[in-house]
Image (tube, rainbow, N blue to C red; front, side):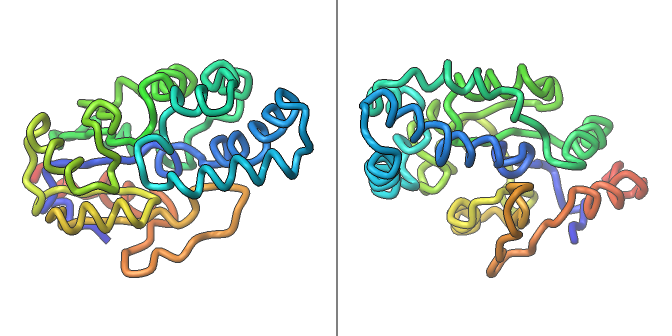
Length: 227
């Protein structure tokens, strides 16, 4: 699936790639509508209609991923509410072992995520995987979501990488397409980002069903590790 001798940099998404997307899906589609309905004293269906319509209009934009924006928009303390559900934050199967395998290697491992810094901090504290990255980059720091071409241009300015020797693993096909247009040559689409939902179609991309599919080869092949 991956010729590790051709990879110098490994870019990894957070939610839906390293972490089970169940937390975020449950938080935004169930938990927040319930709290919003209670706060506004409206019906749950009305709350869902209002919130989901607003979410659809912002999908792929930076505000869609911004906890400060949604705190203002809903009147709810989004970060505090995420803390209430932090027990649902967990790594996807094999993700921790994959990161550990990469730690034994010389390749640059960078977390590239659309999550807000406050959300990143919460999830790093809950999972303990922060030390497993050489760098953590939030799109909120660069001012563009990963779906935007300028994200990759600006990322290059702070994190020098050769697109032709970079691997990106993500569950968002729009992000993968933007990265591909920038020139990132090695792209994998996570097909089971949420453990409670059916697998997704990776469409034009190679689908990654389990980290074992790539980490087992990487861990057992000395040429891959020493390239």
